[in-house]
Amino acid sequence: QVQLTESGGGLVQAGGSLRLSCAASGRTSTNYAMAWFRSAPGKEREFVAAISRSSLIPYYADSVKGRFTIASDNAKNTVDLQMNSLKPEDTAVYLCAADAWFGIPYRQSEKYEYWGQGTQVTVSS
Image (cartoon, rainbow, N blue to C red):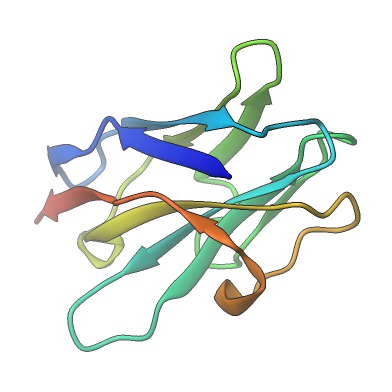
């Protein structure tokens, strides 16, 4: 079992920045894929970014590429999401996810076994 706990959400003006962190505990190893998804009212859960803890190669949704950065600190068992140039359409609950997979991380939420509770990000215009 893996437990995931997100932190760092909040309210920010458009153009601002936030840094989300996901702390993993339990049966963690470097053979895991970690990802961030987001859920907004009336919309399907959306892939944001993912990283393989073994290769440390990041992957991004086109909507956040160039603005968001995902990074894994394997020593601390944390995965951070640095969000810059935030837009009102980035408003959502952001969820951290993990799966025991060492290949290219999946972009489909159903592929991930472990999920955090989520943290709210609100971007005002």
